[in-house]
Length: 264
Image (cartoon, rainbow, N blue to C red; front, top):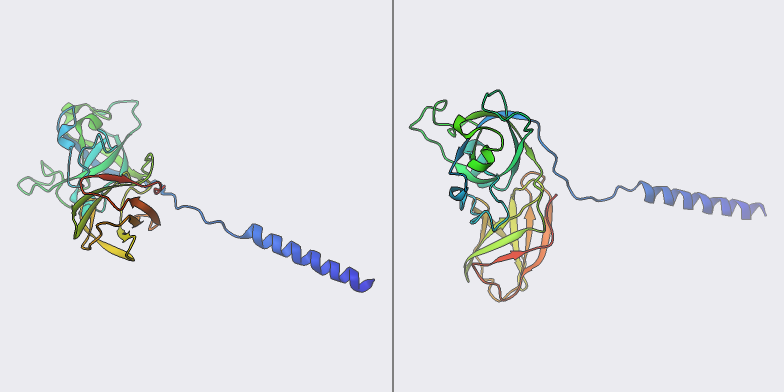
């Protein structure tokens, strides 16, 4: 009888320890991008109230309306643009310390879709607003008018990086030919940026893609007639996600293909 009770005690102890191990095991969760601290910069605007001059841009997003970015966009100075790796990043911007600021407006949120190039003919503090090492936002006029009167021309601001809130999954716009695939990655959530990218055909392994410019990546490979999957690493969070079977075997250039996954 004594042996039996000791055996049952051992069994109960083993079960309790197993339960504690399972309960205490950390769960695997998606990486969530967190806002950065506020910092001081300046903002100007370009274009008119229609934001038509913001279409295209150095990031390669094309029609910002049809591709989901709308009018709330900005061109970044070279310091922020980071050779295009900042394309798709999101910022909260608020006007400060200027009589031109709208009172009662906390901030507006914009997406980086363009580069504000240096103007070396102008002094950095008098017209050359986007000259390095200045941190500067050249906003669309409609976005600028949400925080300040447009007559100001330039206003001091506070800004911070924030998570990009996107509906749906990543989108891939194809260009190139049968031997060269150029892909523009759009609608990126979370940090909004891309560091590395790979493509996999249904008949190939993973092929590393090189950064072309802006939000585009390229692969020199024969991928026609194969369904395509993509693996993408975020520049900011370093998280990697898999986008399986994004494009069918009969994919073509000039088309946009959608995945069902995104960063957060």
